[in-house]
Amino acid sequence: MKIFIIVTTITIIIFTSLTEVYLKNKGLGDPVRYDSSILYGYSPKPNQKKKRLEGSYVTINEVGLRSVSSWNSKKKKILFLGDSVTYGGSYIDDKDIFSTKVCEKLKSFTCGNAGVNAYSTLNIVLRSKFDNRIQDADIYVYLFPPGDFYRDYTNSKTAHFYLNNKKFFLPALTEAVSFIFTKYDLNNYISKYNDTNNDINDYFKLIDFSVKNLKEEIDNKISNQKEIFIFLSNEKNDKNYKNRINQYIKDSLLKELDNVFLLNQVLNDDIFFYDESVHFNIRGHEVVANNIFEIIENKINK
Image (cartoon, rainbow, N blue to C red):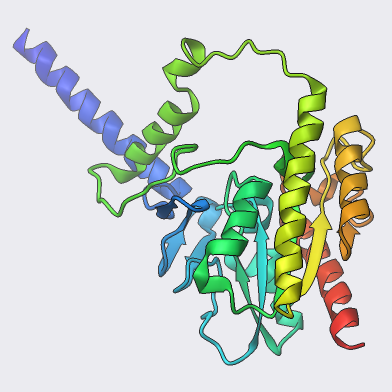
């Protein structure tokens, strides 16, 4: 019996150690850390540089923006706001996200990326309105996939984000376990199993509310002499907004707001998407950056 316990213990230690090494090599163990906010949910803690998935670097500057450049620059500033599509994900390197590429072309500007995973339109609007660190931008660029307009407001408890700087034993394994337990929370199959049938008209009401709040914030920025650009991306399985809800979102934005640009013209090929939904791969970030650059350049050079 004693030999069995010893062998089992050694086996568990070896397996655990090998798993930790494997996950570290995959880029786990030192995730981006976040601050919670009662105003807009959450945002990255400032002053971070992380080597993440596939060797990609994620850099967060001194005001919580994904950028390799300081926001405290004498250059004019472009702020990008959005969800995970704008943020770029931990598998896309800083140098390859479209916000970085735009400022490689617009050399007189510095760019900051305020995109955050799981943000809804309401999160984005509230961040735009209440984050005092980013109110000095000269140009605001908002990028939305359609789903942002009917996504619930998300708080810091929504996903597997680390809200602390704690150092954990076996950090890579801990991050993997945290992700799995968050995504596959047992409550999702018991008390939080949702059998509600939503009325499609409720989606339209939430979209109207989201567009209204966005319009109010855009009007506020314009009244403060800010340049505004709004981009609507698309979905891999609905490239031209044929889905009834996505078409409603597109039509509402074009009706209620100026300076709205549709990205389906440049995102009409599957190779421009990273996964099965809305995220860009490296090539996708490049074509979106080129499109945004041309539109901004034409406006500022008039």
